[in-house]
Image (cartoon, rainbow, N blue to C red; front, side):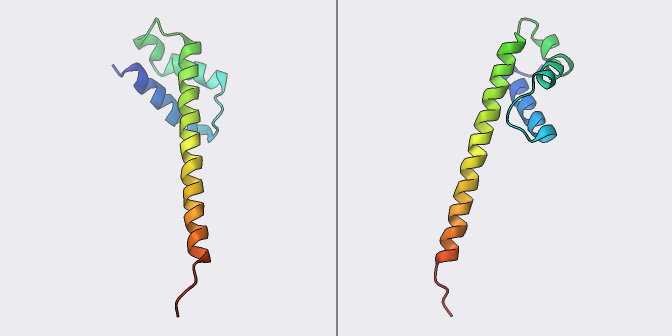
Length: 86
């Protein structure tokens, strides 16, 4: 049985792969909660609390991706401005 945190991570990754969005859809997370086995493995787990955890993971992933993108763009700009030696 996967840990609760592993279910959160699986849900976040699967949601990003399926939708590409960082704002969680309530119907999607409810279906994952029921069909993904979270409800079976953790019957005391609250759907709203689980949804909040998944949204937090999505936000963290989105912020990290934005940070990495800005870093890569800064590197490209830096190398583009560098004078080329003949």
